[in-house]
Amino acid sequence: MASPGFSAPGGVAVVGSGLIGRSWAMLFASAGFRVKLFDIEPRQVTDALVSLRKEMKMLELSGYLKGQLGAEEQLSLISGCSDLREAVEGALHVQECVPENLELKRKLFAQLDKIADDHVVLSSSSSCLLPSKLFAGLAHVKQCLVAHPVNPPYYVPLVELVPHPETAPATVDRTYALMRRVGQSPVRLLREVDGFALNRLQYAVIAEAWRLVEEGVVSPGDLDLVMSDGLGLRYAFIGPLETMHLNAEGMLSYCDRYSEGMKRVLKTFGPVPEFSGATAEKVHQAMCVKVPDDAEHLAARRAWRDGCLMRLAQLKRQLPQ
Image (cartoon, rainbow, N blue to C red; front, side):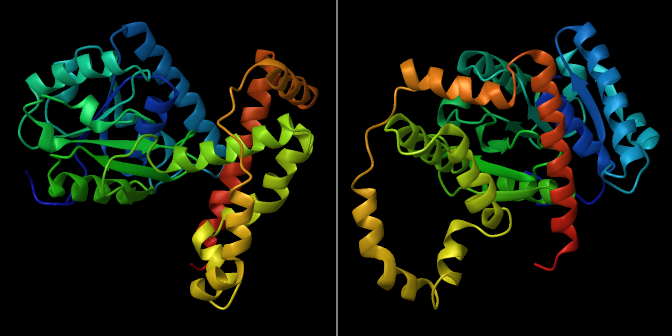
């Protein structure tokens, strides 16, 4: 394995030209890396490049384009490719972004394993597939890990780094350095666990939110306000553990003061919801009152969300840590 870190921008291959793949391509180009964007269908590559140009020009006009280079300079670093071997040749890092299907991803990594050299990092964007299943039996398993971004990656910087049990420490170190270089906020999981860290936290919140609505404790709209106008405001800047630390005279004080109450409430939590039936219909209707589920309204609301995330990210960069 090469030594940790990247001394100079080189080549990155992004495999898959959907939303996540395009976001990765933009991030890598923003830091000056040459990017080969691969898709098996040439038309999809062409469409992706058109979409990238439109989005990056818009970001430049609005002042939210990342990096020191202008949009045209960044776009010149991104090229399309429909030959996997050509895409990977000379790459320092390969970021896989195909649909979340275990067999599809395993098949792709088996192909990458045959053409990869002993230095390139092979990374998956999987949100929940375990590295031990994704990379089982690969000759280059020491060079493999999951680098799970948060959608949309261009606006939300977190990346979870999840190693296979045989992943070399240098692979994690190099990927951590690369993620920092492109402006992301990597976190290291010390071992794999189903759902990783982000989705385990997210699913815990979703499950209790669903139970509270299902049991008639709160309406769907008010439930969302509990997060967006309550917990979410704090959690945009500090996590749950630091919140505990600050809400008393330190962590030990918090645990001494509130642990019995927390345990009492936690014991009342119900079983895992089915996420179907009457409650699903109730939540769906409530969401559609706010955002109708046709393509136009959903796209407009996603654009509003992304704009909010851009402004929040800019604010966080301006604040002292």
